[in-house]
Length: 445
Ligand SMILES: O=C(O)C1=C[C@@H](OP(=O)(O)O)[C@@H](O)[C@H](O)C1
Ligand SMILES: C=C(OP(=O)(O)O)C(=O)O
Image (tube, rainbow, N blue to C red; front, top):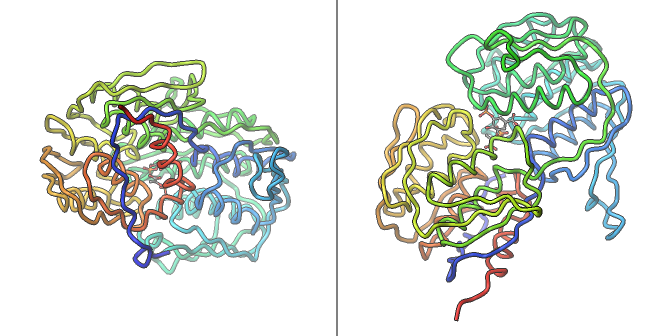
């Protein structure tokens, strides 16, 4: 999946303040957790309003390769195959031999090896070239300590083969999850199916993206698992999942609030207003913190019966923020910071160097390529706003780089986004959604 041959996408400029109602597709993180939990359950279940994007289709394919049935439920109003509004998941005996393509999906490369350890047979994992560089050693070492046999050419990374024997002993394991919270989530999600359950103890620098671990814990509990977590008065950095059956359930996936970021940002930079439909009242999604972060940057939020309305206040202010918990919001916040009326300092995000690309370097290089003044620090970015000009914005096969570029393009004419199709990792038809938002905006005059 290289994007270099795709034509450059001229990011549309907004001639007026945006004024639109946006339906954001389902959460990647929730969809992929729901699929894993449904696959490990004792009864069939449904994943409703799932995200259907590259990352979630890879998760579904990976589970199918292990023997799980995942059927499309047709949308009765359209009758379009594959365009349905639910997946029905039929758990089955997990077995190899199988091959799993993880693409560049962190959730697939980390959540599925523990599932494969429960299968009977060899399961080979490989993915995009970048997937070989993303941290996976914590999952591999932990699974070995819990009883799995894994061949990884000694690299502690992809490609690898899990030689499943139909079950895993489980027990207590220590892991350094400072490079990715997904190490912890991966072990917890399959934990109920380990003979002794699992106790995961983190040791190392602080774990990033804690809301994502809370999402794992909440979804496990909703599926009937017994989980002890630090936020319930437990020991810090220790999570415990008891062995037990998981229930086949009907799970409705919330909209992806991190993917709402560019749309809310559009309201902020144009001084307009965007309503994101079905914003949950309560959620573990890190994107919920956009309400506070974007308010600090100059807008205002209002819950409505239809969803969350966010209105720009006419100016974009700089932001001083530790984004350790909400790293995936960084690209859009950095784009806004480059357009602000005061400097910004985004910190706590060293782990972004091992995301889809080195996001700190990429954001600095690309914003600076448009005339910006962004400096990388050890764990973040300092952004001094400067007048920006058009030019090519490279995206390094990173969906969030592309959506960040679109935000800048709203107010900087001539921004050409490389491989906008890379947004399909988590956001199908982003250019279409963006155009719809802009077309919904009534022209002034
Ligand atoms: O568990 C998840 O669904 C995710 C956890 C986070 O990963 P890291 O902890 O590696 O940042 C986040 O950035 C990623 O987009 C999704
Ligand atoms: C880091 C991200 O993805 P992944 O699930 O591949 O880690 C992301 O979506 O910002």
